[in-house]
Length: 447
Ligand SMILES: OC[C@H]1NNC[C@@H](O)[C@@H]1O
Ligand SMILES: [Ca+2]
Image 1: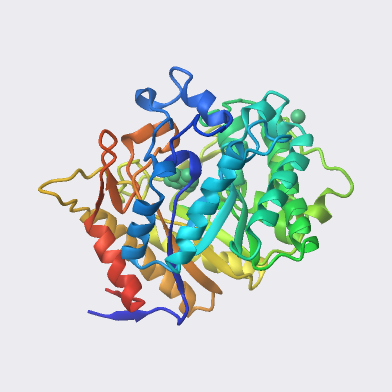
Image 2 (image 1 turned 60 degrees about the vertical axis):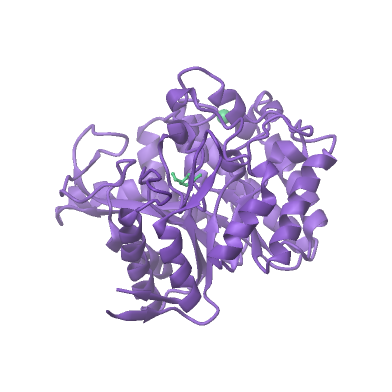
């Protein structure tokens, strides 16, 4: 057995999101979000599941924080539900909603756990959606106002802030592919929305600096690693487009102040272009303190005319897949992290999400999720390789603390290291919880 030691002060953690765990969808003044509307719309979510109850974490702060304490994490990433703070998105502040997050943050600090707060993890107030949502530039200023409220409320208590979770999902997946709320299928709208999300991010970072806030702020894009099946230039170009839609499309504006030309040209061929106003790119390119990276899977890609949106097709290599069907591609984790550092420089990185879907059930009070342990072990090995090769890695938060509402898949897909019985809401730490607890306790990986 080889022991791979992680750097001193490496921050181990885990992650969740408001709509996926809180429930209490209409408690204490919470306003409707686009995910309440989407999940209540027949046919949108598997088995008609909704986030009405979810894991009921809204009423179980002490139980969940006790699990985090038992796990031994240094950081806990959660998100704030905008409609709990401003039920209409702006206007009247909902104090009971704010108080819930004060209780949560105070419990984390009492347990010596660093809160990592995501300002936007997809639950846009429905009232703003009715005025165009993220397609309406006014939503940008409402977001900055919402963020500023939280900055003022939690300055000194929350010192780690993430503006937007996975802008690719919020724009392309939700407004071009239509799989997530609000479910539009309009490429031009999706590109405009992506641009407005980046502007909301940039303006929020500016506000954070102006308020002289304590702590650090970043953004958490999801990245993908797609490599060419061969060095034929059409395979190389197809793989680059598949990566580019997810990675460069957002990372180039954030770090280089411009959209990648090869993708702008591709979208122009698809009939869409980004509407950029003169000041926009300078706002988006605000320096950030860290980059959050969400990594799950990758693929080999071969050129195939007319296939998908990028004339690229994943090559079936016979790799194992998780229970949500995603390819297990651990070396892609190393490759994307070293690629990021080459492309964008030495920005401090947190892995804000990485984990696997396996739908193991409780048997004799235990959940033997050995496949999840194997996934985590393989990916942490690659993370250790990336650190050894000089990537500026600050911490790792596994997705997720507990099984939760997996968006359009509802409760059918389990990512947790803690099992949740969605009838009784009983939480059962899985074998992966115990395994991860040891990794954290010794700050090392045994392979
Ligand atoms: O699909 C697994 C996770 N991916 N990133 C965003 C999270 O909200 C998802 O549950
Ligand atoms: Ca538009």
